[in-house]
Amino acid sequence: MTVFRREFKQTDFEKVRDFLKETYSEESSNWYIDRWNFCRYFAHNWLEVFDTWPSTVGMWVDENDEIVAIVSSEEENNGEVFFQLREINYSEDFINILIEYAEKNLCILKDGYLQLYPMVNNACKDIMTKVLVDRGYSNTGNYETDCSMDIKKQLNIDLPDGFMIQPANNYSARERAQAHGRAFNNELSEVPARINERTRGYTGLVNAPDYNEDIDLCIVDEIGEIASFVTLWFDSTNKVGILEPVGTILKYRRKGLGKSIIYEGINRIKELGATKVHVGSNQDFYKDIGFQVESRTEIWHKQLS
Image (cartoon, rainbow, N blue to C red; front, side, top):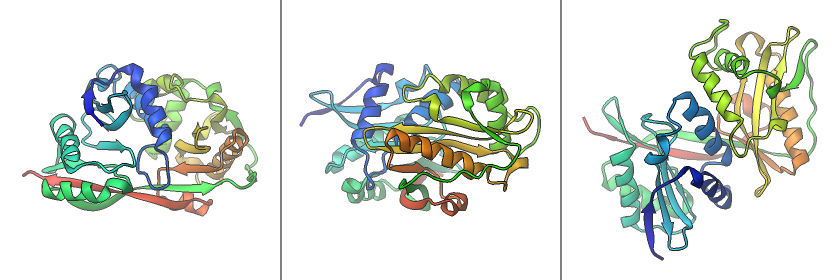
């Protein structure tokens, strides 16, 4: 097999999405389609790097233009590098090529360390580990964790009085950005931090190829303000749903709103044919409502100074 790197183009977005579907398994550490969509259409609009990010992606294909490997950041200059790989036996030389690309084009220093997030599947974990160690990297002891829940039946929704489930698209990008800021910054202010950036993110999110407004939901309070929210993504090939993002604003926590909106979303993707749902979090909240740890991805870095 002849493998070479070629330019990643915006038109390759869905090609990579299909590659992620094709390589989905419980053993793989590749991204699910939610992260690929959310990264591109939310984060890159937030950060205003939508036009420049494609030039940073490393894409290796075979003679039939089938994807062999992807090396990319989630956003510009955040120092995190992710590897999307097939379940094949990569050579040590090829793994070195991937890491050299990451070091040259994507990694940054943080506290004297070069950060690298090798999203490694089981088929090449040993060889990737060997190459990382040989190049001076060390395991941080930290992980990215994926939790999942098998969908076996319709889930009961117990929504407190005064709250109502609504389509999230009934609300403006700025209203959604306000809720997002309040949830993730743990604040109550009318204008949370970086609201303009978050608004750009929500404006772009609806343009993602896999966005489905029927599984983009929120709970509103008596005056119509967003109290809790979840966006789900559905991979029909593998019959899995993924939560990204999920949040409840500070003043409405511990009322069961997060559980209610997630269960409503799960019920809806079950109707679409989903048999499992994932979330990229290890929070006790998710375990308490039925999720279990499915996989953990090691994080490596390299000290330079």
